[in-house]
Length: 253
Image (cartoon, rainbow, N blue to C red; front, side):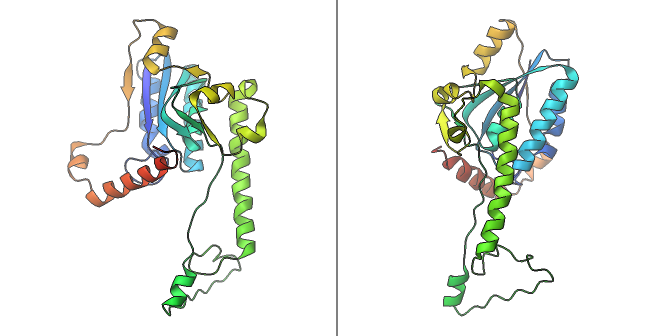
């Protein structure tokens, strides 16, 4: 039994983040080495990039179908937003009663500093060759048409997320779509009632229940060479940690 740990924010660029490029060799090794009977995904992620979430999930599904291997997902503290997208790549999803699950939605956040600049006598000058090239510039006043454009993009991304969850979870999902896809998140028990997960269980218990007491767990995760570990940038590591902490903090973690 191969076990892949998927921990941290998705696609934020730091070394600790999850991305398709970083995980590709890990996932491929887990599915191919020793012809595993099944693959378990141990997930602890508050989400992140919808594109990287989709790429990672697609890689998992492609390899599972190619090698005809069952995939089981286990949620630790949180599988929210993109983290739930990863979990939905599995054939079934299990969580702790206190796990946070859901947040099926898309978010975009920024800031506006044009008033701050004006108070300090700073004028923002932007020149473009196309009308929409400077949309959502945080140093210019917000424009209603820019906001509408962004909302349209977010709705389109959300629709893709919803379609994927429906495809993967099917009839297991509750009929209350307005609640399921509202961006809310729930603890494990309620998530099970809504059909977002299949039950309350922990990895080793469920694996041995499914595959027997003699099941051997082979754990896989991203590797860094000794040279990479010794030469790691302190600033980069700190920024990565801050990003992850901020993402997890949305869920009270």
